[in-house]
Image (cartoon, rainbow, N blue to C red; front, top):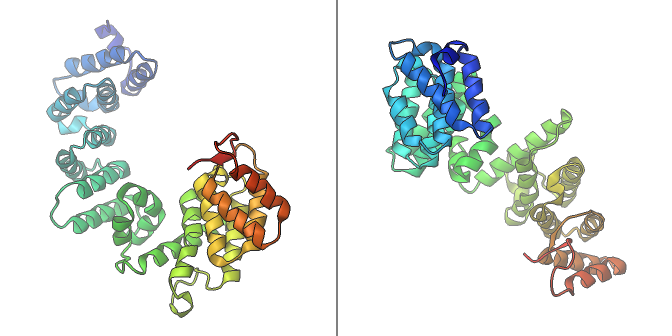
Length: 340
């Protein structure tokens, strides 16, 4: 048992750390005991001095399946005892339980009290698109404006730097509207233009490009095939010719040479398809040869079939024979072949 002497021996920060440590060392019940003792012994109005402990205790309660207890305690606490961390911890729990309306209400309270966080804001946006909310887009844009103001940025800069995360959380439809890409036909070009801009900035700063960025660029080759880019104004970053696209794909492959995405079967398939759309069978063969020399990867049979077609076009007989041998296997006896 945790005695009153034990509680008094530690300040707020240390007590919070002990609670979290006990959670991770599978002694979460002892941590919860410390939290409950702190709450009981400071119920006379001194809980504002234990805000870190409260956030840690609420997190521990949720972790051991006592989410309803955490909600009850949270609701009973005075506002002075709450914090950004406690609001965020409760927001995570409500999101996990898909309690969308309480989550939206909690976000509003946190914003009024000045305890909102970017994570809680993202959870609130997920809640907004997951339930019936009047003027949904206006509400989402208001949350974005609040986040931008808290970060000291204008709305456009904040959205641009968080676009890929927001897309993963909310989907392309809502992400593009928050970027004010209101034309659904042009929105993929807007996204591609943004991806190429970020890719070039990351290269200039000697940073590894984001996976979302390079995927969007490779997938963007389909727009070359589907849209008459030569006659579309703007989008200065988007290539207009086969040569320009081929050069950009080469830059992407060089930039991802040390990235795990290089061995992703989906990424490999998309690169091969991009070369096919561009009619770059020679470049596809060179890429196939590079892939064949990779260790421990899996390639779809459908991708191998596309590689085989390019190899035949370029009269690469050795490569053709190697691919045909792999395709002829009834079952994926090698880690190189993926049956999907």
